Image 1 (spheres, rainbow, N blue to C red):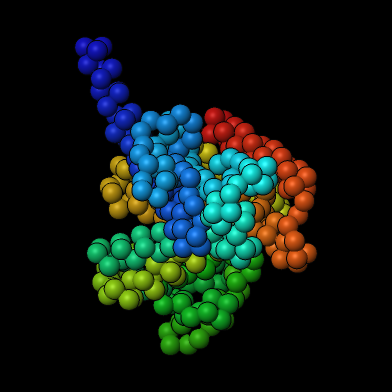
Image 2: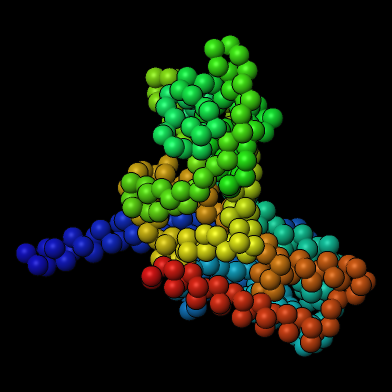
Length: 376
């Protein structure tokens, strides 16, 4: 009996933790690195290795162009290594570059123009955003999207909306002068505002009423027990009053919807990161691999669509994280290239090396912090 329970536990651990986690992370990492790889090849740069994961190689092969495609043992990221790179972080190897033949130098990353290097580096985060657009567009095209009219069925007592004078039966027509067509438009507008007053225009019995509502930051708990701090007005819409329904979208409209949802996630994520650095808000909600694995498994219980939508959200976060101006990350490389464009020549090897060491310290500190959040 104990052996049977042990196998049952192992099965659930693999099926509901390991597999969703590996699927989500592998898809995101693959597309990120594929962006670097594709643009690098277009720019005439030789790719030495394309790796999913870090550490010892588990399996792989070398293609006709000399690129080693491999799957490594530690599935917490990946990298593309170009000719002339010292390591997986694309730190230039000046010594190796000086000893290359003329033919090799023509294919080395560090020998390319600053514009080609910048395009190659920026292509990784860009691929994350393209992936997110594609996922949202595909879900909208094949499954449709859920929409509901912005009609208030209930105003919670003592909520910001109640204090401001919003009533049940009101139809929200604009927020801060922005037209509101569906109830989700209202949710998304409030989500990125924080505790900032919102000008609310409602239609009440055919009359336009202008109100000002200041959202309140409250902690909500989802069905899995995850706590999230969000700005809320205290408005409720039910299926009868708001006419919730599924809307089918064509191919072009699906792409537009995917771009719109991705832009919303970019703004929401940027706002959250800004809040962490400027006001220290929400730092306790940053998570690392354990949190990602947990949320992947939770999404898996809701079905495949939930898993790929979670991957889309995580892809935006990883894209923005890599754009932070920290050496070792893509944003740090772009910062160096911007300095090179301004100066007309690259920063010295000593300055770049010092920058990468500082960047490594910052990245390791961030990893320790999110691991601590995961554990605690």
